[in-house]
Length: 137
Image (cartoon, rainbow, N blue to C red):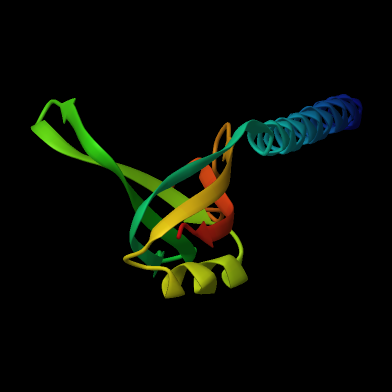
């Protein structure tokens, strides 16, 4: 009987060791995958400017507070709901730029932005991140 217990205990040790190793490898792969996804998502897809009438800038969010804004580019666009104004939504990662935009609300502005592949929830609601703003005279 004691020989049987010894064989069972050795088997349990082998299975336990294999299970620990399996879950450790799985955890490391998940961490590497998440890190790679966040890294690739932070790449800049495009870089440019947009000009128009600054409609609003606000701080939004329940868990992650982000700075969001809207720019009226002028003209109209056709969508499934009919004809609507040509509005561009953007996010602002920097508080100083956000405060500058608050002073420019209702004015013609030129916004410099970078478009990312994917925004993380703590970065903003859009893939467009405004890093500089200037008033058009």
